Structure formats: C-alpha cells, structure tokens
Image (cartoon, rainbow, N blue to C red; front, side, top):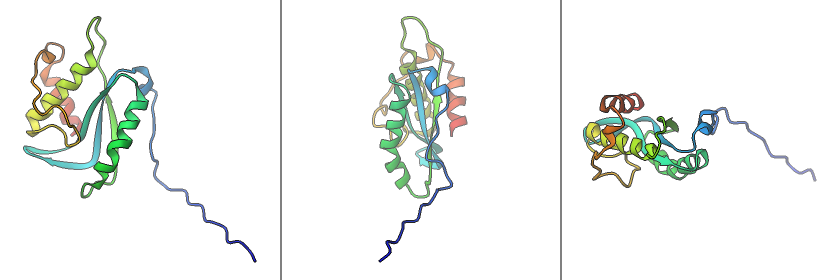
Length: 146
C-alpha cells in the first residue's frame, strides 16, 4: 500500500521583514498599524498601539506577536505592520520614553483616546515632553501614520 504524500504550499505573502534600521538603536519607539483605519472617539486612524523598548527588535516583534491576535480579530483587519520612530539621544535624558509620551498625548488630543491596544496613557499629561519635541512635528508624525 502506497503512502499518500503531503502537499507543500508556499504562501505568496511574507509573514514579516526586518531592516537594518531596527538594529541601529536598541532604545526606540514603535507603532503597530492596522491595514485599515480604526474608529476612535474623534476620528479614524490606522494606529493600534504605541510602545517603547530598551531591548531592541526582539521586544518589538514579541509585542507585535502578542497584539496581532487582538488586532486581527477586529472586523475588516487583515494585516498589521510595525513602524519605528526614533529621535536623537541627549546626555542624561532618556529621550525614547519622552517621545512615546509625546506621541500618546498628541494621539489622544487628535482622536479623543489612546490607541486601542494601549492599556496605559489614558490619563497622561504633557509634562515636559514638548521641551524636547515640537508639537507640530509630533502631530505630523501621527497624521502620517494615520
């Protein structure tokens, strides 16, 4: 009796990709985007999560894997992607958490709430983040990602 062999299928879409810029900075801010706009209180945006890491790309990919199941369950969403947002270092200042805070504050101003997958940040205040970043530039980055 012959054993029936299994069929191998190569899927057309890639499951992920990594670029060199992910390895330049270990400390960075990342944004997880859905392939369609998500409804928020004051509008629609593709941004599903804004996060930060000290550990580099492995933390980013782990976060994407953790949140992908939730994001892909939303009606109409078929894919999610990660974009990196970086800023220059400054001696004595951890700039990446300040950048994350600035992005969350501006996102909340524009859309009325923090991104859906963010658990923290709902009561976040600007504090000193706009001493380091221009509000107009942070706003433009959020609008470009949306």
